[in-house]
Image (cartoon, rainbow, N blue to C red; front, side):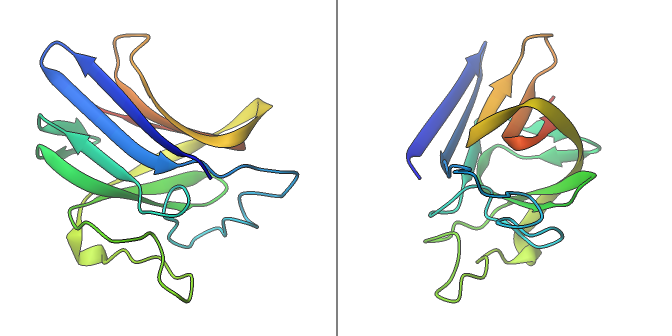
Length: 150
């Protein structure tokens, strides 16, 4: 699972995501490889990180400027996406359990699942500002979720 850093900058806002990109490789992904209703490190290997130099509004909540780990709990209709203030050495422990400690969740956002017509082979996180509404998008297999950032 190759490492990837995604940077978004506009005016005086700078966002950065670091994650590892697992591949589908003919596997069933959501509900199988990534179980439903269980915490996922939102990528592979190290915990995925999200960094912002400005406070953001995510849903009804405010995320202060800083560096966070990004976790999710996928299911077939929505993903709970958590921005966690603790940094972890790795995404999972030696028993493959996610290392997230929920007490450090700063913002949790429920992102509805969109079904894609075209399969996304490698897990992809991106920033989308195409309609002047900034969002964080995550897509893999036939699934996409969008987290609006203001």
